[in-house]
Length: 119
Image (tube, rainbow, N blue to C red):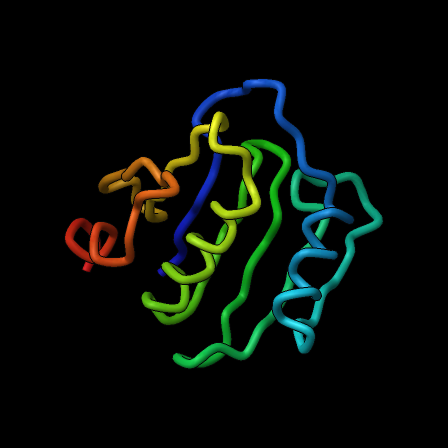
């Protein structure tokens, strides 16, 4: 299943794809990043070997955020990592591809909080 961590509305906050990619490589040096040169709301995607297997992801401009596809616990870990890159004033939501629920993704959100809703 695909999960999302994205801004629910625009606040003026921006993250450049190069900034995201630099953070990704800093924390996951073996990450395979692919930059897209065509006009897209997804300027880059990546693959990372995680404890639960391969995690696939996209960085998005609209809405500003990420998509992740892989083991649920790995998706949670990556979404919480992404939250750590985003200023506290910028709200983020975590939700699934079916939009069955959404959870505010804050600095206080835990994996257990997300598992309680989606697990």
